[in-house]
Length: 413
Image (cartoon, rainbow, N blue to C red):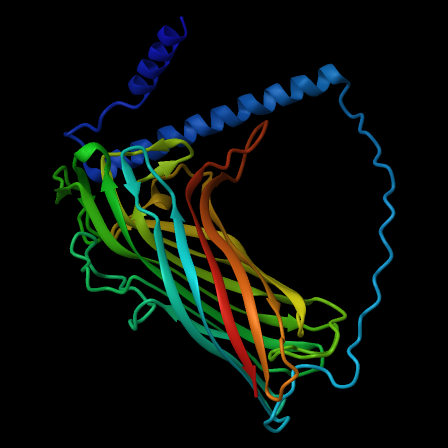
């Protein structure tokens, strides 16, 4: 009985998503897929909201259990070091420098599709970087370049997806934050980050898929190229401009030995640019006939948080963006223009980094051993700006997760 039910359900699903008609253009195929998928996602969201409302009425809606007050543990006293604070430096106080070098393992867990698999990209990398403070008026922090090659971390935006060469680098990452302290607690800052990975998207079961180059005219019924795989350099590029707030009156652009009394914040505007192998996906519905080089753009609010730091203490760095986005499939086609009037595209992007700075020796300059781990990612999604009733549907368009484990040496000069 269960097999019969499963077979019937599978047949109904196939009938709901018929094969792409050869008489339609690429633009029409994608437009029909977007409209049908969003309609189904909206209907499922309303049905779920109705079920939740009915369940609440049965339980006597509105009654909430009161939480028992929780006693927070008393804050632990700082263990202040005896004598001088680490780290020790050997250059003048108006020029403070942290030199960094390390090695790590960096990976990318990409979104998978119904008919195309994207091979995870994992690489061993080396890195160099540093932090600098000049005359207490200019700070350059989090500066780092990491790669397994010597090529640039920026990917080309115009190369054809089908022709993108195997000569490109395998993985690279660049990060820098430039600040100009104007007050003890305020610092205008600019943050830039770029990540790239060589990735391969391969059709399942040895079948071919229609690969659509970026410069392809989508008002055509012809498939420009059919192949069983596509290799490109995927990239994630972010920039943010804003204000850093230091309640403890110390920017900590370089590693400081004083006790950290308060977290530091970043508030500003951000920009995101993202490129990857992409099949049009709306929630759980994928248009498996075409494989694009998807270009994702967005702009919105940027927020940051830094907690801890110093020597022989943990350090937490959190950064995120949230705003409106655009998904471009070719030079003349975006998902935004195909969606119904009340639907917009949003995005969220961010990372969490946790590290520990250990000083095994009481030297001048001080040598630090720093293990760290980072998890980051980005996601684009449709959302409905107006809904008559029930829950608003927010079907996902894309998601990707990146991760890194690293061991670094830092010399404070």
